[in-house]
Structure formats: C-alpha cells, structure tokens
Length: 297
Ligand SMILES: C[S@@+](CC[C@H](N)C(=O)[O-])C[C@H]1O[C@@H](n2cnc3c(N)ncnc32)[C@H](O)[C@@H]1O
Image (tube, rainbow, N blue to C red; front, side, top):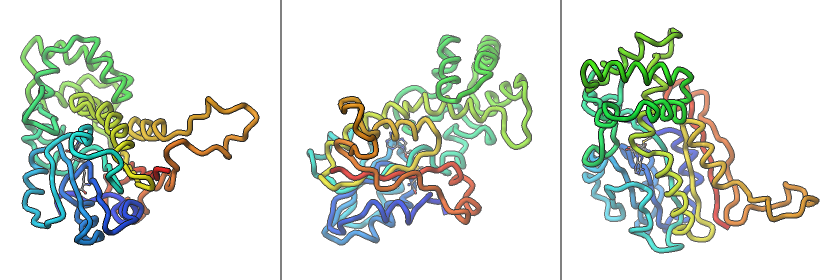
C-alpha cells in the first residue's frame, strides 16, 4: 500500500447519500478514498478528483472508469469547474500523503536527505530553500510560531540565518541537523525539527489559506442536502473547520438558548470522529486525525 487511507469507511459512509450523485475528492493522493467512492456510486454517478501534486495526478491518470476525472489543480479552484448547487458531496483528507515522505526527492522528510523542496505542486512557485535562503528573519520567526507553535522560533530562525551566511541551505538533512544541534530540549521520540518542518510545509504550500478559500467555494457548489466531510490532522486545520461551520449567534437576542439555534447554511452531522484503536495501532499517521461532516440545509 502506497498510502493508508484514514477513516476510510467512516468518511465515505457519511459522504455518499445518493449513488447517482456527483462527488468531489478534493485531495486524491493515491486514491484510497476515491477508490471506495467509485465502488459505492453507480455508473450514473460521477467522481471528480483534485490534487496539486503531479505524482498523484500521474497515478490517477491510470484510472479507466468512465465516471471519473482527475484535475491537476488546487481545491481552492473548484468554482472554475463546477456550477452553483451542482455537487452532492465533497471530501477533504488534508495534509500530506505517506508518499511525500517516502520519496526523498520531494524534500518533505527530515529523515531522508533530499533537496529542500516541500511543495505539493513542484511545477510552480518557490521551493522551501528558495524562500528560506532569502526570507527576512522576522518572517521565519513568524512562520515557525504561527504554523508550528514552535516556542524556540527565534533561536531556530537565528540558527538558519547564521547557517545561510556560511552556505545556502539546500538539503533536508542540512536543515534538520542545524535545528537539532541548537535545539535546547531533547525528547527521545520527537525529532527537534518536527514542528519546524510542519510549519515550513504549511507556509510554502499556503495550506490554510487555500483550505479557507476552498470551503467558501464548496459552500456554493454544493446542492441543498449536499455533504462536506473533512479529515484534519492538526488543530490549525480543525479550527478553520470549526470556525467556518460554527453557528453565527450574534444576530440572535440573548435570551434564546444557544442549543435551539440552527446554523444558517449547514448542520453538523458528524462531530469529532476519531479513528478506532485498531486503526490507530495499524496506522500511526491516523492518530491525530479528526473527522467532521456537515450537511447543507
Ligand atoms: C492525505 S493526502 C490524501 C490521501 C488520499 N485520501 C488517499 O487515501 O490516498 C492529501 C493530498 O492532498 C493534496 N493536497 C494538499 N493540498 C491541496 C490543495 N490545496 N489542493 C489539492 N490537493 C491538495 C496533497 O498533494 C496530497 O496528495
């Protein structure tokens, strides 16, 4: 298996409510979720899948099903392809695939030496090393705080600044090593560069902004009764989901009990679903996953 799909049965059970419907897998990866959607929908149904990663798109282009199409684009651009109120369900399985870490050439892993790239779409934009070797110190500090919750952000950013004066930072292990050498705390199980690598990945791919933009588009292209299923892997993603779908209470008088108020456009149909103990044991990547599902009303 190239990548173990997380919360597979649970997510697709919520997503598919009409076998003849039109569905979107916003994060195709290696097709774990798409495969099950294609198994469950009828030949009248249709699955459109998106991925920014050209490797994922190459993988998907081998699919021969007539009711499947892959788009090499960000999920923020759904509105380029779909009309208002035309879609029955949209799935987001956020973040990275195992394949990103397995292939050192993609530059995601601090354990495998490779070019410091980290872009999901390595056909455009700046690689991490392009940015890191030129970014102002303050910007590096802010990225580490904001996207990695890294309390040693200043120290790490200064270390990066010192290193790049000596020679450009071009390799994943070079970055991991300089962070490790200066990192004040040593925890056996967690590599000192873990939070920094997460922060840089989120930043270089503009992950959170693109997800927010995508939810806004998803809201419009979804039919009434249509469903959005999200699988998040850290609190920054999960907070966006909670905020986006949170009922807006402000316009209601104070004396109406909050639990009687329905969100204007969506109702929550699955709240904070976690992988089973079995799944967490079999697939350690699933441990941080949180699934939620919402229906347009
Ligand atoms: C966790 S993996 C999906 C795995 C997939 N569900 C499976 O089971 O094989 C997330 C995928 O989303 C892609 N991705 C990340 N951000 C994206 C975006 N803004 N638009 C489209 N795809 C994106 C990544 O390239 C990655 O392949």
